[in-house]
Length: 90
Figure 1 (spheres, rainbow, N blue to C red):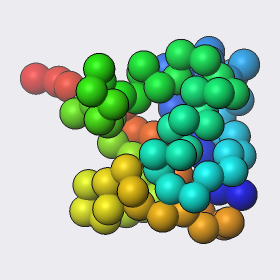
Figure 2: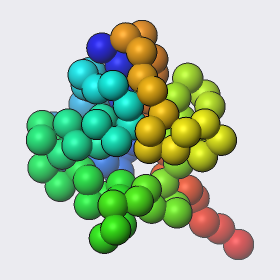
Figure 3: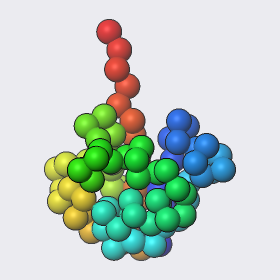
């Protein structure tokens, strides 16, 4: 089952776990399952229309899903999904 790397700001939702295993066939299903297991997760990742927020980057095995199939990006058993919040600075 794919593993999901949880960034520090979201670990309060996962009882401070830095990585969780989620059974899902694609990114969309992964987000729904994260929400089922850790309520409040989807609101942090997705906007009101259900799209991944602009300042959240999701990677599957170091590949940005924006350059793959977006939320329909397929997941395999040994994939690693990384959630990377964008960092603003000036």
